Structures are given as C-alpha cells and as structure tokens.
Length: 145
Image (cartoon, rainbow, N blue to C red; front, side, top):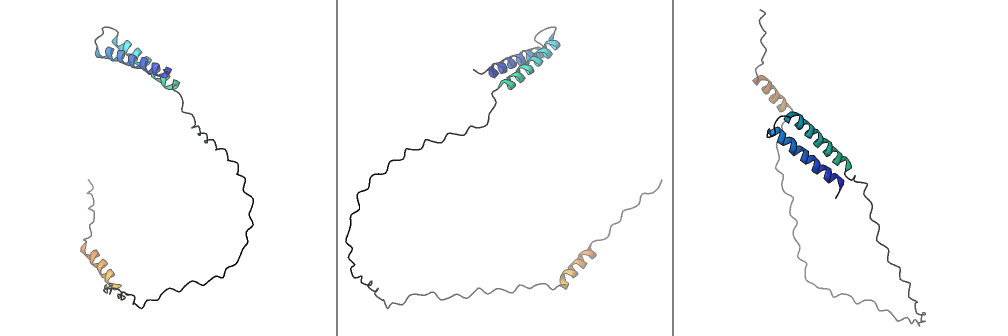
C-alpha cells in the first residue's frame, strides 16, 4: 500500500474528530480541539499529496523485435531455351453492329427570370424616407435651481 493513502486516511480521521467537536457532543475544549484537529487534518492531507508518486514522462514502448530475415534459397541454374519467333497474327477486328445508339436530346438551359434590379436612385429615396420618418429627439435641459 502506498504511504500517501495512509496519510489521507489519517487526515480523514482528524476531520471526523474535528466534526465531532464542532457538533458539540464533547464538553469544554471544543474550540481549541476543533482548530487543532482541522490543522492536523490539513497537514496530513498536504503530506499525502506531496508523497504521491509523480507522473513521469511517458516511456516509449520498445519496438517489437524484427523477425530474422530468411536466407535466400539457392536458385536453380538457368536453363537455356531456344527462342523461336512465331509469326504474330494481328487481332481479329470486332464485329460492327448497325444498331443506332440511343441518344438523349440536349435540354435547353433553364430560362432565368429577369430579376428587376433597383436603379441607383431608389436606395437613396428609401434612405430619405427613413430619415424623414424618425422624429428628432432632443434632451431637455435640467432647470438650474
């Protein structure tokens, strides 16, 4: 068992004893004992945290051993062959069929509907209308007392 676990257990026991004193089930020295056990619990918890094993840099796994390369098998001695050139005939032509290939008639491109583009003057008119719609608000001045 790791030593930091035992320190954590002692810290929890100190916190439980401090809780008993806070609950008031024990008489006179409840405030002093509560403070002492809380401080001890904090010290043991800190010591346990300091004693925990540190996570070191990850160690790379060793690559698997390479299999031994098999030795090449001895090749049989080359056999001399007599090469005779045979007349090569051209490939037979493919039979031609007289059937017409069905074709799809080309479809005309979709007619784009003309989108009316507003004239350059129209946005200016819209802006003028917006400006005239809003009344100008002015702040009232506070009366001097």
